[in-house]
Length: 387
DNA sequence: GACGCGTGGTG
DNA sequence: TCACCAAGCGT
Image (cartoon, rainbow, N blue to C red; front, top):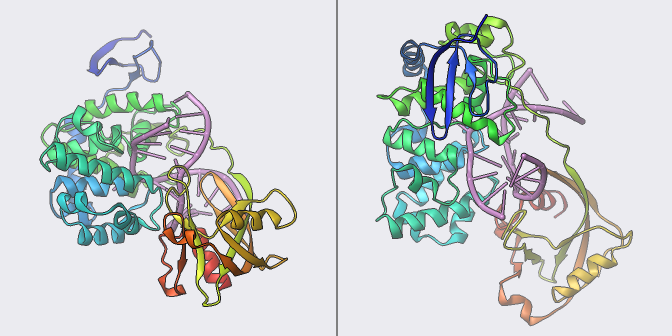
């Protein structure tokens, strides 16, 4: 059998060649896939979406600012987790202008517990830029949208399509899973270079009239039907188009390289109280893990004694009477790090006045004042368990 | 291109 | 319990 070119499609610098004989890499920038009737596919998908789409708060109106906020919150975060944060965020910052004028501390407070805190800081930066540079109107061109801080190829496509109904690809994890099964693509989706193939395939399929609904429908299908494990193929509105279903390989797609295991860090944490029961906290660095968030003073454990912890407190300007033994152990698992913490209690015996500039060290009056932010999650656990 | 960056849900 | 997953982006 020979390769017969059915059609070709250009997107950006890449060309997608559709051959009658699927799953053969032709050359760099070319990929052979089976043919799908895009008109029939759109009809099947959109009819299902119209009947089955979830009633989500950011689908109530078509405000580009609200679409934008929801898309940032939804990055690597599940819908059910996002909903209460989104509702609260829109109460606090109903318009783009409200968010642009807010203090960073207030924005981070609203994000507390949601994770990936740079999303909040980047969103705030970008919203201020839109207010200053674009007259408060979220831009509607690919270059302008993607230049915004925290807006990458996925989010740019989502804003352009969902807010402005522009036919642009919005390729997230759901879409890569759905598309990889539809066309039996065996590319490793954990590799950034795989994105181009999926963007081209989406552009072949996308509805020109209903780009917003089409992209949301693809993601909705991935979330509700074409799930990572045990996809509900019998309920799938596009099962007749699906190569993986036809070949019975839907369970092994998409191909995704395994992540490496998280690194373990031994930590020592000090819960320091003064005579009034006020608790000492310190601010983390401007960048990196939990940037700008507050925590109980802690260090990575190097020695068996707690002299190093005492030295750390001393460097903060605090002299303490530190308990010899840890009162408890607390484990906190991040995506890529595990903190195994020994918690020591201490009483403050001396305090430098300079500590209370408030910039990097603070005392909290009582426990009720200690909220999730400025404390990282792991320290909320310590509060719950040991105070 | 690899790595850093959170948290909660699921089978 | 554990491994994996979830509407990614910046460095």
